[in-house]
Image (cartoon, rainbow, N blue to C red; front, side, top):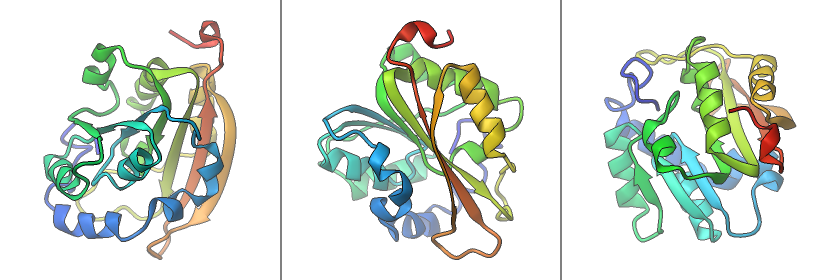
Length: 209
């Protein structure tokens, strides 16, 4: 779910099927291993690669101020229709640079990247992590998932290790809070996931520019 056409391949064409897939599982099921890392008080939340807005809607229902960034127009329109009247603010933006979000000057207490990071190529991941470091507020958290296994036809995905991701985050001043491995909720053969949580230092002086 990214700006670059190659990264976004397959999502618009398969939007109808993906809407059913994304909305067929709940926020709690998808994020059960990291639910304790989500903020309890009302917070500024960015759902990067929001898809149909399933997670954004669940977070808005918990009182958070949610920005949902989704570059695939078909998915964004589906999310706006399915989760209207939730208070979500939808934007067309994505990693690695997220130019619109960066230009806004907003900082977020939580950034969620669910099934997004694996679309980033080697040369894109360092700049994408730098973007996250610029968008996260002091003391904020970044939660992301890494997909492993066969790549669906027509998609662009990369095998990325949690170790590499942790090192990229540390280089940008983000501390590791959590790492968990789990099986695929849709029981796709050979597919598994890592869930990672990072925290920005409360003192902005430690964060990389």
